[in-house]
Each structure stands twice: as C-alpha cells, then as structure tokens.
Image (cartoon, rainbow, N blue to C red; front, side, top):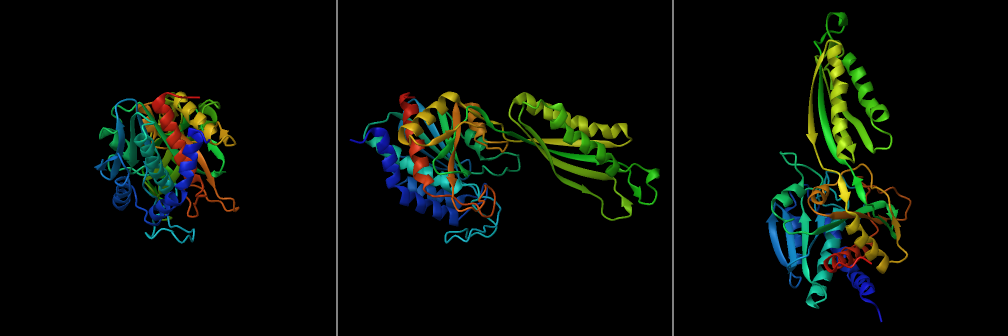
Length: 400
C-alpha cells in the first residue's frame, strides 16, 4: 500500500502533462513586469475550476490570490508571473510570440508548478486530510520596479496578502543543476541589491589646454581604484559582498574635456551591517574628487532585501523532499549574490525558498536571463509535490 507521502508525488506525476501544457501556454505569451494582464487572466481561469478555492484577481494590479480553507495556521505559497525583455533564441515550438519578451527566468514554470500544487492541496482539503489555510500568491513584477522603485512583492504585502500568514515558501528554477538535485540553505541565501548613480564634476575645457581646468576623467581614475578596492581591502574576506560598475559616460567629442563623468554601479551583500558599510565606502571613494579640486554627487537606490531562509521552514522542505524522493541530492549552499524579491516576504514572516534542479542534459548552456534559457519539464511535478507536501507539514507541524 502506497503511503500518503508517496501518494503526493504520484498524484503530482499524474498532472505532469497538464502542468507542461500550462507552462508552454504561459511561455508562449510572456508579459513584462506590471503588465501581466493575460497571464493573470489565464491563471485565474484555471484556479476558478478548482474546488474550494476562493480566487481574487486584480490584487496590487495584476496579482492573483487564491485561498483554501480557513483558520490558523496559514501557509502562503508564492509564484512570480512576469517575463524579461529578452529576444528568445530557443527555437521551441512554444517559443515567445511576443518579440523582445521572454520567460528567461522560469516564472512560467513557477506559475504552472503552483497551479499544480493548488489542485493537489484542494484535493487534500476535500478529503479532510488538511486543516488550516493555504494562500496561493501569484505575484507580478519580480524582475523590475515601478516609478517608486518597488517590485511586485511589496505591493502584494501592502495589499494585505501576508496578513495572518504564519509561514511562506517559494521555489526557483536552477538550470545549473540537473533533475534530482535541490538547493536548500538556512539563513542569508540571496543578496541585498542596491544601486548607485555617481557624477564626478570638473570644469572641463579645451583638449589642448588641460592644465587650465579640472578634468573629471582624470578624477575618475582614483575613484575607480577606490571603488574596486572596497571588497578587496575594506570588507572582510569572510563576508559575501560585491561592488560592480556597469556604466561610465563622459564627453561628446575628442577635443573637449567634459565637465562631468557619470558612473553607475551595483552593490550586493548578505548581512545588514555589510550593506551599510558598502554604502559608506562608495561615498568615501567618490569623496576623493574634492581633495583633487573637483566635486561629486551620489545617489543610492535601495533595492531588494537579502533573502533570509528560516531554518525551521527549511526543515519541513528537506523532510518533505526526502520522504518522497529519497535519492534526491539536497545541496546546502547559498544561492549566490543575485537578488529575489521574495526577500520582502521573508522579512515579514518565517519563510524559505529552494532552488530546484531543472537543467537539460544536452550540453548547451541555458542559464537564467539568457536567450537560450529552457528547462527539463520533468521538474514540474517534482516542484508541485514538494510545495504540496511542505505545505501539509507546515499546517500539521510535522517536521520529520
């Protein structure tokens, strides 16, 4: 007789074709952040066929929230729905029909997996096997910000989606790992992301007479040295941290010394103390311009908080995985210095995100945010089973 945990995996596997079809439909019709109108309509149309689900649309714009059950505890599952401004080059029969827009980060997979989990958990509630509440948060705009510098998660939180939530879980595709591998890590696992926009100011002048003014391109040299020395010499080598410059702009022609140089970059860190240190060190780096007769202005845009994975929630994920897939390789390692706006959620409630291996064994690099990104779709039922079984354990308090 098959036990309850294996039954979850078996039921998820029986939905593999359905989840694949959902994923391919979403993949073929990608929409950018804050414009997921068709995607949210499609998601809602599927959810509305699921028994017991209460479906709310138009949450924080294009968000969709579905609710199962009532009372506490309350567990939230989250999937993101937006795509990226990338021209797809996969040649797939279900490739993007929207030129210049592509699901290159797996949000189509996240959404279809959570649709599968909604069906599976609804069945558990119908049979009286689960008590409490499950919220399914289909979130817009994980990839980009609005005019106020906010992604979709803080808007969903502001709309009250996290009210009375006791724990939250999410997953992310990992094309660097094959099917049969999963990354689960306690504590800080993805980075704070902050950006800076600096302007180095001089007087400019004639290219033939640089000694008569202050050249901001000359001032740029010690600034760059100081900026690139922050992580190398100012931050402890035991701390994850990155300072990178992505843009430098100056001048209009070859015989005119410009009056200013603009420098844009990004800061990544895990711990709040290091986040603050990076901001202060960049300010110090630009301040050297004043000692050399120039000036500067500097603006910071504070972005997503670091993703902090709760150890207790992760224990439920690990035990759920190994109860259903005993041969699954569970890798305990941070996910890197990329950012993930699920970090807004884990700042408010205990939560965790895991990375699910989805790599295709064809020798082609199909990394996140690339025109060739694709997944092995056999990961879809695995993801749905893990979300379902973890939610059940969180509701019941079962961790082993």
